Length: 241
Image (tube, rainbow, N blue to C red; front, side, top):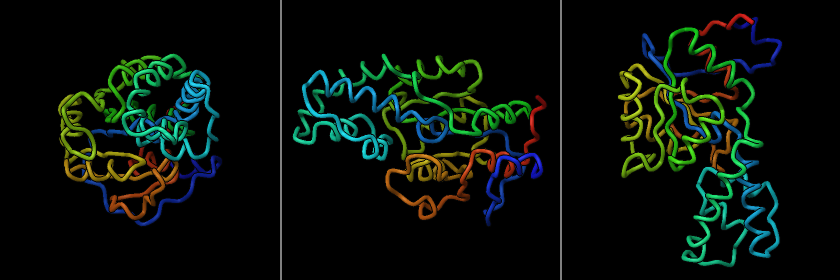
């Protein structure tokens, strides 16, 4: 495994908490963990700013807050609006995003290979996101993942969402996974909180949006810098070309 990853310049794994034995599967956050969706989220904001006749914000500050959801994204474009004004913009923003969704969204480098290795080794994988269900389901469909993800739990599937552990428990149930033999991977502190509260081994990743936070300070069982480090951690075999 190490030799297969060396040409890709994958950083070496640091000191980590030991994995549970006989891991059954991996649950992932979606935006910022599996997918770099910020370009399309930003594109939808630009369209709405144009419709409203306001100046468009720069990309960098929008990218930093995309994990907080549509209201925070809209505040970047409409800083003068109060809470009610921002809320009024949300439905239109979500529809604009639905129109452009998956045009520029791409899996992070290494994610496609990682998912293939999980499947080849018979490990289930699923998604637990705070994204609204109608957007999650359509995005997963457009990516061709609908028949591959063993569980998909969205932000409105239940009455609560991450950092509450209930969505993680539900995903484990959908995928037939024992939480104690499962890994949860995310780029936000609430991912670590939700996964830990549900009894999963938690992995924080540094390649995502991070919401301005430091993943080393979230109390995760492991912090990784590249998706293929997870393959190394799980001792997955490369999939033959």
